[in-house]
Image (cartoon, rainbow, N blue to C red; front, side, top):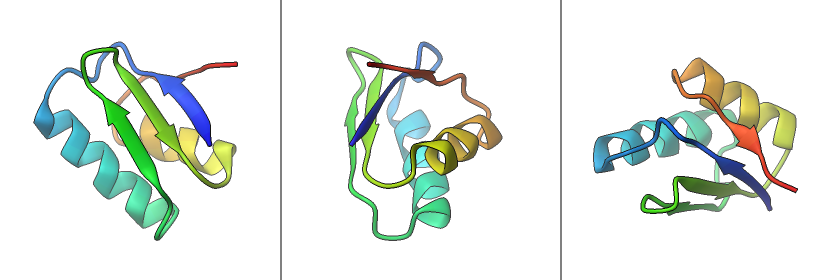
Length: 64
């Protein structure tokens, strides 16, 4: 799992948009979202996930 901090993810609509983008880029990949902490974790290729998040209009910051 790769974890990203997304300071611009703030609501359920954001979560839905990101889940759809990641499902398209990484079909079937596990995605976990913590809206309160602005964190998203995704299984699979981190570079593809990051590109999909950026393409959806968000600013991912990869966490160690």
